[in-house]
Image 1: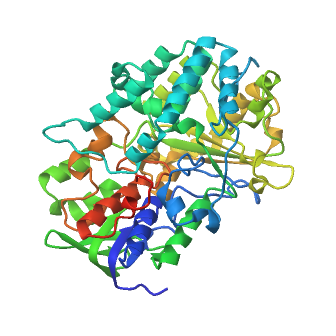
Image 2 (image 1 turned 90 degrees about the vertical axis):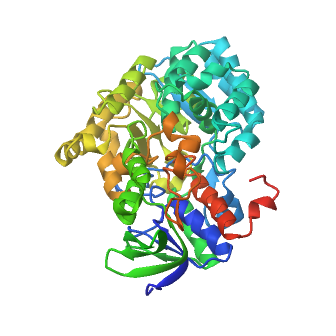
Image 3 (image 1 turned 30 degrees about the vertical axis):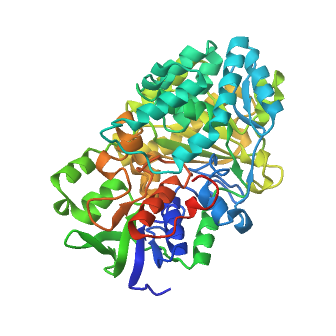
Length: 544
């Protein structure tokens, strides 16, 4: 399609946050276009046949924890456009190399599922089982409050309320019946105070890190609780691959009249004085933005390169330079095409571990999990090649040829910049062998002969392909000073920039990464107020 030279709104980057913002703007009456560097939209929400034909692997976004609440999913009818999901009963678990009983945590779809979680934990500790169930039930009662926090811009500090996050955190902890100091503690401290069982602690450490929460970082206790008790048992599997969600989002936006341009990299935000008036593509094409430009691209690239440091105030230039990326949210991923699904030694106690959606493999103790995290955050390739794995073909046969299975798994790894390209090439060529050798101690059938083909996706690959800088899926460190109303930094927390008409909507914005579509939706709320657009959240009866 020939490039139109003028739009009301221009979106830089076709990740799902940018698609979300653009679709709502188009529906609100703004003529909108997305310009995407790659050959397709969706960024990290994609599916690949990277191992062998017919084997599907979600190399980045894997589980969909927000579908029940995601405004875009419901407002645009994505299920009718092919974005359909399964909700596996056994949600997360951990197996052990000596074959002792696994711990399996189940969905909250039915009350009896929570009782199964209680029974699984009680094998080790009745106290821990009761504690987990009690907190999980209370978290369920808070769901509406937590969703409204997710799908609204963060409350900004005022003279009367200089730390709005503090009061919200205190209120949540009080309702949960937990001490207020847990909010200032690290997730590890909270987990250790709540649970006495080493096996459960190891699983919970990993679940904290799973959503990018550094397990030993002070001040992240509430975020760890959210990750372990709310998001952790809401994981959905997209039927046919996560790319079905991205494709449905694009189709919904096109149906609204929005335009998409692939292989169209934006290199410059065009300014008139201190106002954004358009963009320039890598091939020199210039597109006018009559009302606004919004960026889903990397924060530093947007401000320091596309806008240009010379066009920023000293404060904004310093804030952009100082914004930290990684190390706790940095991923590598494995893809294995298998003859057989893993059969765990621990399954003799509870066969559900063989059909658990997300299974932690390679760690027998919480100390091993901590050493693994410390390696990754310290810039070292983890000496323990353990992972969290999904065998999606167990639930959806479209992921693999008949009778075969498709496995993918996440490793938390050092930042891309900690190693050279040559060193990453060596990791890419050898780390799966290390993982499979260790995996066999947990599941004896996981031999090299069981693997038809394999693929390893490094943090550098993710930076190169998806522009997840350093391989960080949040595109910005999760830390107390870079969260809530301080994400990415206080002056930019409401999605506006100091450049008039330039907005931000990427994963470095509140509430962070993950396939929530919240950043794009919240940016739309701010823009709707700035431009006098209709506010559908005021009339949809949803509360957000």
